[in-house]
Amino acid sequence: MNTKVSNKKNAKRKPLTRGRIVKAAVKLADASGVDSVTIRKLADSLNAKPMAIYHHLSNKEMIVDCMVDSVFGEIALPKTDVHWKRAMYERSASARAVLAEHSWAVPLMESRRNPGPETLRQHDAVIGCLRKGGLSIEMTAHAYALIDAYVYGFVIQEASLPATTGPEMAELAESMIEAAPMDDYPHLMEFASEHVMQPDYDFGREFEFGLNLILSSLEPT
Image (cartoon, rainbow, N blue to C red; front, side):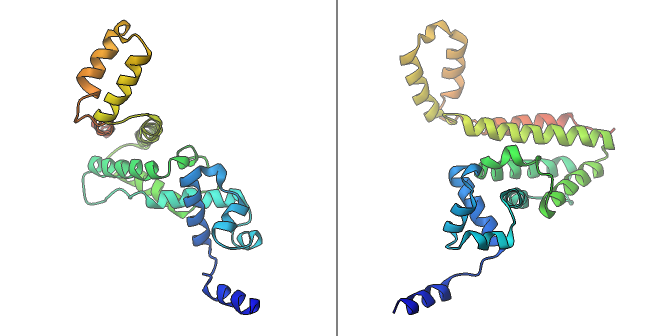
């Protein structure tokens, strides 16, 4: 009887592949951070044995490499049929949205020594977009570093804020006013009451302003 039950479970078990392992690892990291991705937890989430993981990916570093490459693969490549600034705007907006879903990946995006095909494809496409826009090699380097520093930094800042919308800000401000004599900080009170506590306030709009400011300053050289 036990043998039959075991056979049924094995028959229903999906075959383990590198893709399934990476997808499960990303899911674990999304839920609890990249440090939570251990071989044992990964194996448990896939109803597999740890040695089965090693058969496809030999160590955690390789798993993390593949996880980062998977995140790069979710970011839209710059379009080739629109103006380069529009293409870079849309690609950067996509990167922000993707990294908001995988905030654990931000510090790792440019740190891997063994970049995968999606990583290389993304970098090649961005450089190609900037070069097509007439930027020199040197200016392309400046532009790429500036844009990605802004995107990565904004994602980290946005994820760390305790509130990002008007109603949330109003609630936060009330608790701050109760805890501190805000009359001692008139400029902060003016900024809060006349801007961030307004019903239509959305911190996300700051991303659009900053990105447009950066792109408008970049010109072919």
